[in-house]
Image 1 (cartoon, rainbow, N blue to C red):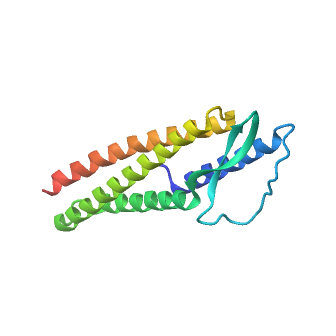
Image 2 (tube, rainbow, N blue to C red):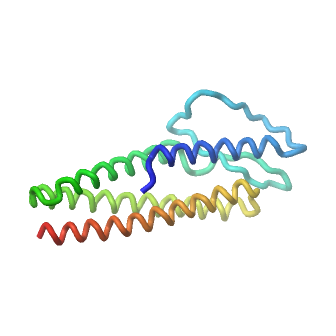
Length: 167
């Protein structure tokens, strides 16, 4: 699994790249101001959208809060997996409970990934002919979702295997 800090860095870099790409477009007078302040939880991730032969920066449906929640969920699951690996043979009752909690968290993350995937597809549909920066962001997000799906499948298999060992 990718670490939460890498996810945060990739997302920050992607957002900055998208903004810089929009600013670099010739003939566009954009009213954007870059700031050193931290984003608020309700802020939306900006994307570049093609609107009547102009590239414009618009807010996506993905908020900073959602990205942070996903990062926190992944960090917590990684911690729990490591803890489960360390204590897998020591106590079958606690292992069974941890396994059930982990399964529950896996299902929740699966739902979050599905929601994110739908949002990416909606953005792609709504933005039609997006700029190459936006298209590469969407492709990158799709790849991340695919990677996470594979990791989740592996995690599910591991949880099922541990569950069988506990029984």
